[in-house]
Image (cartoon, rainbow, N blue to C red; front, side, top):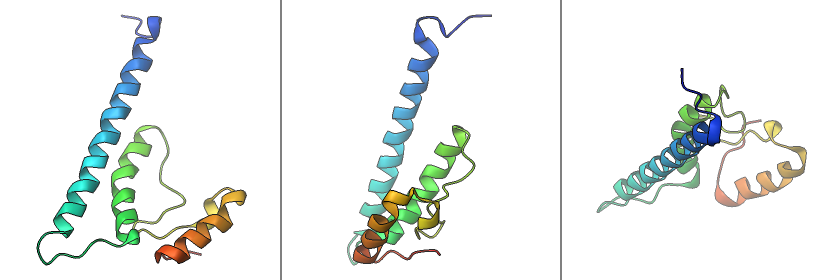
Length: 104
């Protein structure tokens, strides 16, 4: 059996895999926005973008052992009660300013 941890080979592979995954997620978001801006299409709302982010990020965080995104719902609403206390007020203000529903 080969020891892939020598020379940090396994860590390099994980970093490369994560970079590729994030790049693909970014491409998927761009495709979603491009499709919604087709002739006659409207620009997606921030909450719609968060819903797409939820669908794209869930498999990614699950691959790293996190079962779900606690601070975001499937429909793109924010759950401030799962956020770090210092960021809750900022998140609430941001949600109000951007028309994002708060799940409380």
